[in-house]
Length: 248
Image 1 (tube, one colour):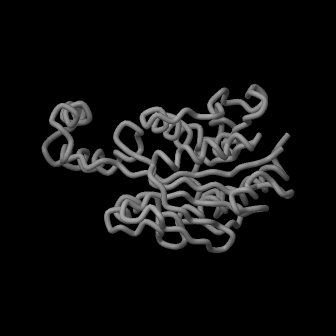
Image 2: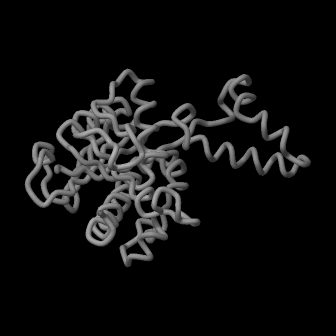
């Protein structure tokens, strides 16, 4: 089956710029559960830094896709082939920015156009591979798409278990598969799984997902896109191990 590896990067809104009602809806529980002013301040700061984890208070700033097939595929029409791909990313200063490096095409787009491009591309694939995609990437993509008036072309949330998923849109969430749907006590993040299997971790370059917001504020838009490539390649390498040794 045609296989697509995908990953997203997100940022959150500025909490201090939100209206009072929204701030209250987000933070009421902090005041209720905090024991003292100092604990409240720490919890509030964590909340502010975590707004990018929700499609209600965040947005997609990069969508990376990588072809995982051994044969020429639909990605060819997007300027890519085997293990090649693209990262669509936000650059509010220059939506015409475009480049290519190491088989990956980088193209600046608005968030809406990125989402539309992803769902257009998804129509040409049968199998989708992510790391923690069921709990984060896909719900985020689908909700942001709906908010911006883009209809998803395939259902990547049809069922958690592979044997029960709809034909034509199988979503392999490697975190689910490697943790045996949560049976493993410590699930681990992509860095830990990469380290265990001897795969180059995308975090080795010194950038993590927590840095994306700061990079965006510093207008280092292409740096975000290039960081995303590391996640894509690590996910594909991890998939290959799972496919060879653990898939039944």
